[in-house]
Length: 403
Image 1 (cartoon, one colour):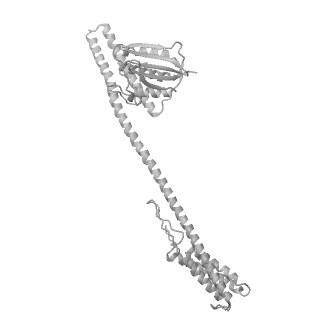
Image 2 (image 1 turned 45 degrees about the vertical axis):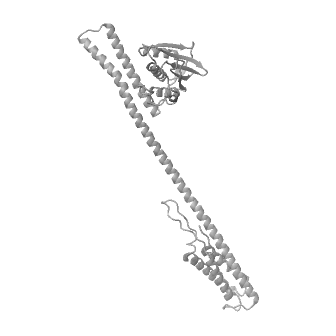
Image 3 (image 1 turned 135 degrees about the horizontal axis):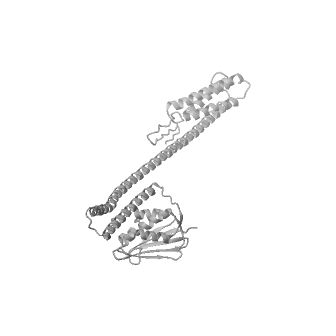
């Protein structure tokens, strides 16, 4: 912005391509339109004041028209700045001398006091007009600055909204990429996890079918083969249950139906159904006597224990021991399942509960532990992984007591 005494000029820099330049309220100050308009209004008001006072000039004092003729100068100063104010003051002085200082109807000054009055009038008119012009200019500058600030603020709001939109778009892209990676991982893991038990079931079914046509297997072998089919079918059932649970977790519909659950009975039932997983392992169960009931969804807690037991059986070396313990710990029951395998590296422990996260050399789908974490937390508990006394993996999870 630039301000000069002869009609200051303010240049407004517009921000943003979508906004039209703001028209200044000073009628192009410094240009012909601004000061000509002010001069025109000033002269018109001078004429109006003179016309209204002429019929009474003989009965009024000379101070009255002098004071009233200052008003057009003020108006000219507001509209046209200093040039219009000075020109209007000169015109007002001429009209004052012509119409209100004897001898009337000509510009003449007969008395010294008339000279003083005219000089005072001109000075007062010029000073008042200039002050009004300066004040009006300052107000206009302030308005222009306020307008620029509003423009910058609006533009900043627009940029903030645009940044937020871009951030959301970037997050959406990252989410889609993450989902795509998860989908690929899911397809790989499901194809492996489903193919293995299905191949076993198909092979056993084929052998048993041939045996029906040409009996050759003893009863004990047939029972063992049927048991293998049952185990693989149970494994398929657990895989499908995990996939369905993962879908419910991702959709936010994992809502537990909590009830009183006996941990000792649930552990015993799970070990009985998963006994074939531990045929080459020893299982040590250490449950505190009189273990209190917990408040949890039975099927979800069943799935948590099944996944952790299967995980321990998968990573435990042959002829090693899997430990299962449970004991009260304040307002919760702490359940611990540990093995004597290679354990979980410290840098992997904070990521092991992420979906599709598989440890080195693992052939699992990578969803079982993620489901355990989601279900334990949905039932008001916590889960963590650490190192067992033998250096293997130890999983601890809590379940609130039943009130």
